[in-house]
Image (cartoon, rainbow, N blue to C red; front, side, top):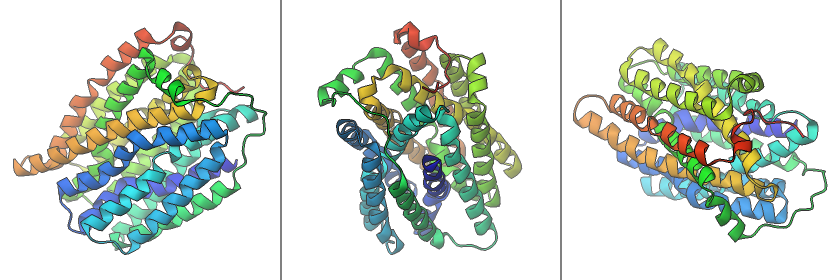
Length: 395
């Protein structure tokens, strides 16, 4: 259960960072291009940093110890954000935070998958507690803002969640089962990356994640531009993650009816529809309701991706495989998506058609490319992996 507690407190911090940190930086006077730079630092770090951490975890066979070190680094690097108000200082601090934060999800997923197998349960049942933490923090801070709260308090609250994350990480236990795996070398990771089906899968994930950038970066600002009460920002993220939790809880049942690749294709189609609707709707309750499609945008996509990795990546490269997914799908995809979203936002305002409207329309167009890469991955993935149920199996 300790990894579930870690997920809860760590993603409670994510529930503050994703919906509100961009808006906090906007209160400091930063424009769209500056916001794009700040919010691109994390995905930029994800391209290069997680594979090194993942390989370190695989070579030492101590993913828990490496996770603790990453959490400690994030905490120490974020602390000065309480006093940073200039663009240059914020860039420096966010870059330092990204070096330690970028591998945390891959490392914690590695620990969770091992724990799920040890306990005879499923990864998604452990991971959903992170989504619950996200819900509570996103909704609570949205409520705080709608009742007179100030964005200036955001760094303090984020720091509190980072402190708790580090403390819980210190309580995590390393897997108890004996390990007799040869430590992997850098050449092994490179060989994995050269597998056509694996690489195409990562590219499908990168396209999908790029399309998600306006939601993570601009949704709250989009509501502000539409003069919609910010309580709907918290409600929207809460509803979205509630749907995500429901998907994770019921994923086993869903995956028994829909194989992995069709389920991912459905997720991509519904995500494109989601961004198109957000671009066209200007009503707060309706925008919040649309976010239930997050069950597929993140829930089905992410658990499906972990399932794919669990069955196609060698056991000796567990952390490395998930780190490569973080690096290419989330890092490279997020970097590209953030830059496009920032440019589209500024262009939309310059053309007086609405920055958020244009950014989400572009996102819908980008998402249309994801099924193409997914189809290539399907054709190049071994039949034994693509024909199985998408559910993660214990044991």
